[in-house]
Every structure is written in C-alpha cells, then in structure tokens.
Length: 87
Image (cartoon, rainbow, N blue to C red; front, side):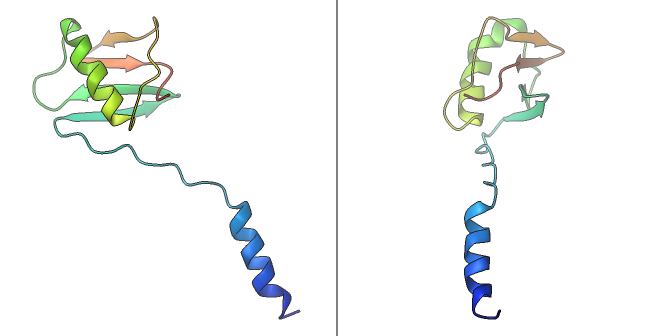
C-alpha cells in the first residue's frame, strides 16, 4: 500500500485542473469579469464613448494578448464592456 502512494500522488497531479492565469497588470486600467464578459475601466477620468480605441488597446493588454472583440462590445457608465471576454 505504501509503495503505491507516490504513484497515486503523481497521477493525481496530472489530473488536477489547470489554474487560470491572471491578466497582467496594466497601469492606469482595471478589469473585471462578469458572466464571461470583460469590463475595462480607467483609473483616471472614466472612459467616454469616444475612447473606444484606447479601451480596446487596454483590453488587449489586460487579456495578455487579445480581447474577443465583436459588434456586441458596448460602452456604459464610464466602462467599455466586451461580452465575449478574452480570446
């Protein structure tokens, strides 16, 4: 029984679920996740509707590569919302 314990532990480690990676920190911006959506806010003045390009660049960096942008992306209450989250 004792001899099988190391093998059991080793196999359990192989079956462990992957730990989700944290988005890299991006100075001046914050991200929140709600229902699979990515919500991007700016620490300084809140985003406006005309700040979509800046919000998209920040979302790409917060996702560690690329946000899954679509025609469903929208602006609300000083935040840009990407319903599909990170790609």
